[in-house]
Length: 302
Image (cartoon, rainbow, N blue to C red; front, side, top):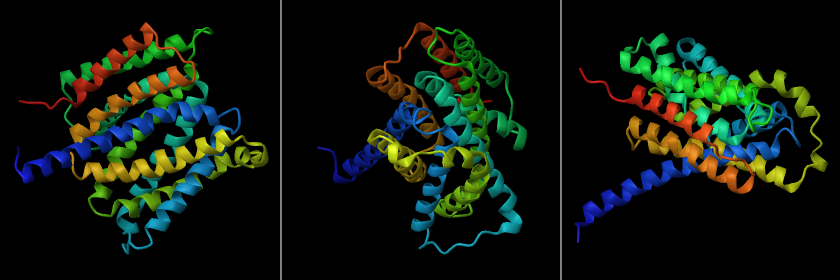
């Protein structure tokens, strides 16, 4: 029998991987859940107003005990940009995109995020560009193009307009990840989250106010309220907390590898509960995207 210390280390390792697996499950189910809420019962931008408002309130509530001031003169511009890319553009494009396309398409396209992080890093912090990474970039975008091209077929489950919006969402989120990293080394993550969501709320409010005002709350079915609770409490709030916990205990490459779990869960859930179909085209596109991401996140030696 292994020593008690060894067993504790193994148990801790298992907990970390289970946490990341849970994040993948929550994100994977999110694509289908969003489609049960939008656009039939609530327009996408109206839902974003609700989501960001309640998420901001939650982060401010749990942040009451954290006495930390932001250096707005030094970091204010970066925080606003994080709110723009991480909440504004990111969420508006994601919800509108997923409402138009299929859950399976959206989940595969979102695995492009590490590629978008690489592009942003190359532009902002001058990350080294190699031939291998360029090859990965091309492979990933070929996979995305396959999905978009198929979405132009009227008999296909996806919609190319939604696919493009999800790609733009991945680009925005990639920019956010690069921009927010220096802030997380200076401030508590909850402090950053509460300000990003508060500023993000005022960014999305002018865009989503009209659709929010049109929501007929008294006529919404119970499944819509459950879907909203899942997205706000599960995917927005709980996932953020779990990710913070995991990222402090697991190296970035391990966290990044779990992005491949999302489309697996998304495909299973969409196929079992929402009658979406996994096709050979999906598999081909996924292989191209996964290959591209793998080449880009692969540690470079030499």
